[in-house]
Length: 628
Image (cartoon, rainbow, N blue to C red; front, top):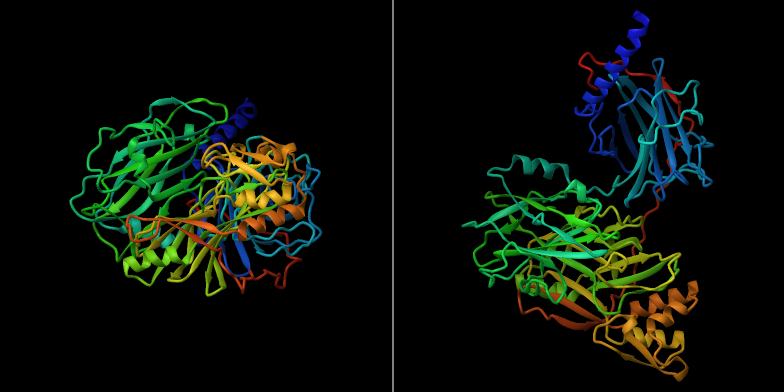
């Protein structure tokens, strides 16, 4: 009878331990700059810190079996650089592996390029600590760790390998695996600023959120809600902004934008009302509420401002109302009831500088942004010219601004985004870039160190798109299936500028495409329409064929797409320069930035030693308090 009851007792104790560990943080064995839970249940956590050449990582998982983590090109096992470790019989083990392109069980690498630093198994939690180089030291299967988005895959088993290696029989359970995009090198925030928020005096919060009422949406739906700001009698500073996303609607909410209304809007009959944006039935106030103060994208987190800057609120003579714009991505057209929005933390303890927000890049309108069908790589350029930036600085009577964060934004075709800075025809190191952009992970990234932008500097945004397998062209627009190319930057001191974008001049698309596709004249069916609204009128054999049809029917070669991208980039552009001050020219014609000396990113190379590490160590014993 004893032997029948004893296993049940052990099983119950293990389950209870797991439940407790799911709710209680386990401290790491060392200090780490950053950490992330990789799963929703918080059963798998990774800590890390980096220097110029290496990354040190520590994995905690609620299991007494093996744990694995990988760096993947697309979020799956294929082509991933994988590290698996476990603790058995008082020894910690680690193996360097890879995900084969044909799928299946991950074999070991030809070289062991992972240095085991420690491991333990305490109270149902397995810890494995290791170090590896940022560079890809094993040429066949290692992947470099870069400043862009890193697609992490993870898994864990319920028991240790029977022998000294992992075999196909040691498979994880279905719910003991997953993937998550994170920034390992491009830090999303500053830990010190997070602490400053917690320590600031007189902290208060207010929420700008949706109304929670149900509504039927289209596959792409923009909802706008007009809300009044808190009635503050004197100036305060917002020092932290964070998304408040309802878990049930996380798959629908694609991005949020807060737009300030002009001070002239003192009272509205539509206070608290919600309507679809950008339609004939839109709230009348949305036409004037164009000054962006915050943006958030899917996968992003909170933003803490640096210690010497805050977003002003409660300033006499400034905005009383804002518009909350929410983009819902709903391909199945489900009925949604949502109260997602944004939370602001503010204080009366004013900081040294007022902070501002500028959208830079390619204007979202017209037919100036075109990505041909079935194209592997296509570059689109957006310009924020020196005349616009410098003009706003002139009005504010400052010689420079300091960018401290950037939110890079495109849609599903986006593969890479770079925010460039040009000074006197020389390109400086990019303030922000992501060469492995993930549409489902749009995080506001800290610019460290802060970037000083002077009068005369020119900002340029480059987006790289892939439409492989798509049979139709992709145009600029609001829908997820359409494209944008923008960088939203936060900076100080504040200048009277909210939008600094550009688009090829009217008619540039027809002039560029005509010689390539063999037509001479076109006619627009409606103003500011898309390519489906432009028909060919000459030659006669193509009469009334739309430009969209002509582009879709053409078999685009790599050489042609490169030529098309270059032609659009070099064409004259219409600059859109908008702020609350009328002294800045709203529209003007500019030429693209001239770069005589481009910036060359330094390559990361391996430093010795890079292989031959021991893959086993004596495991750490459990502390008395069961904490690492």
